[in-house]
Length: 141
Ligand SMILES: [Zn+2]
Ligand SMILES: [Zn+2]
Image 1 (tube, rainbow, N blue to C red):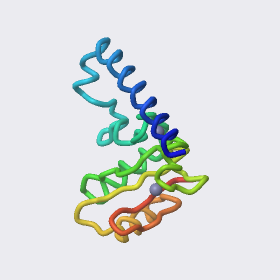
Image 2: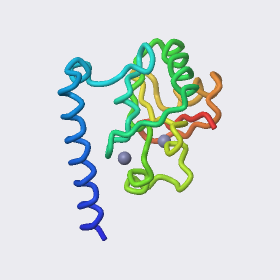
Image 3: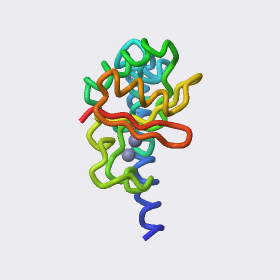
């Protein structure tokens, strides 16, 4: 089972590398920029699934993240954004994780504890948050 999974994963990665190369040849600027900007402070690659690069994002989430960034006056580091079903399983995410729908991000903010970020995020209209040891999960659902 493990072997099959890793073979599938390598195939996906291979497909991704191949398609990226194609894309880079057509548009070298895109490669230098390394990601499409979704808003002033967030690029697509920051929210992309870390196993396949696919990105699904609820745009309301980006709007809320920009508001949160402004309120905290500090950069928000996204440690996990969109997760494809395969990746969600691999990281032990819950079955109906909001990461699967592009409604959730796991974040860290320098100068703030996860609890502080969580409280401020809730005040600002994020509908659900969960504090972990070094990061906080925030989502709109
Ligand atoms: Zn993936
Ligand atoms: Zn999360």
